[in-house]
Length: 68
Image 1 (cartoon, rainbow, N blue to C red):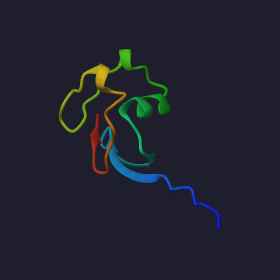
Image 2: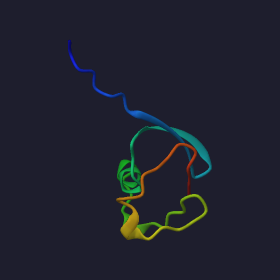
Image 3: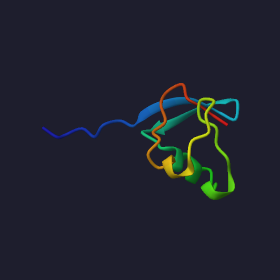
């Protein structure tokens, strides 16, 4: 019997106020890269907090998160 690959997790977040569904798991750095944004040129708000840019790579997004 073959081994099934796990399906990507579907994340429903709000991105700049709009509902978005993404395949996860996904870090904040991944999200910026998908949108071709450089971390050094943007300020990100995650669930009403502004994380340190050094934390973008370890900040894993969760269902229901709000990103501005």
